[in-house]
Amino acid sequence: MQAGEPLIELAQVRKRYNVGQPSEVEVLHGVSLALRTREFAALIGPSGSGKSTLLNVLGLLEPMTSGSYRLQGREVAGLADDALTRMRQRTLGFVFQFHHLLPAFSALENVTLPVLAAEGRVPAQQLTRARELLAAVGLSAAMDKRPAQLSGGMQQRVAIARALVLQPALVLADEPTGNLDTATSDEVFTLLRRIHHERGTSFIVVTHDPRLAARCDRVIELVDGQVARDEAVPTAA
Ligand code: ADP
Ligand code: MG
Image (tube, rainbow, N blue to C red; front, side, top):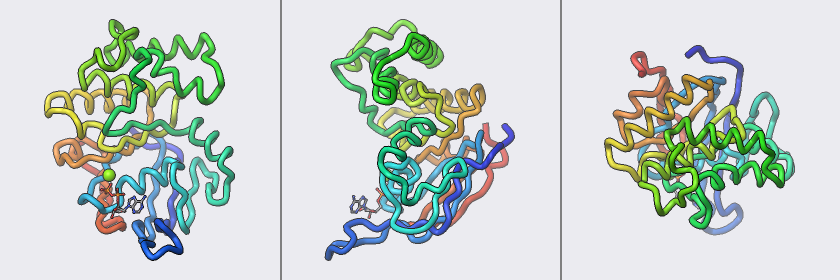
């Protein structure tokens, strides 16, 4: 799929934790990165290299310490929390290693939670979209089930539908198959690729699995908080 408009432009982004304390530590040492719409990239690297930190900065969940981050052309440095929240809700979806579904709610209710958080209610049109997304991830028959009644792979598919309900331009996925067996992991990954293909959603997927990285269009490797490699995968599927 052909890449489109600039979506993410990071320039010399540094991230320090515990600034001003004896435990101050710099985790990202000047990361520069550009991603366009309709890209599907893997983010790989050793444990502790800063992958989750980078995803949290990209996801507007953690402020960067210095540098520039333009999301859809807009600089995010210095924006107030409510502006960041609106930007996050309008533009980004998240999938984590552990699904973080709310146990007391049905699959359908879990998928509509971002709508409730963003709009304070769930309009009929959004409820319809949530049902369509659950159908698209193969869960038509499980909409009224609670997470505990679903398998691990099904739970992660609910989490994927939830990430898509506000129609994000970019989904940030932090080891989305890290908690699944190989076969289920392959299925969930195939689903992400299909969503990318059908909807044109961009993805950055953190993975430890070289087989999955090889199925992405582009591989970005972080080592010690710096981009050590960033290249296209010629034979992505
Ligand atoms: P990865 O996801 O690649 O395993 P992380 O981004 O989770 O790496 O962590 C990178 C480094 O930053 C690690 O050394 C980790 O201990 C440190 N780190 C992560 N989060 C925090 C935090 N909230 N406070 C202090 N250090 C942190
Ligand atoms: Mg991590």
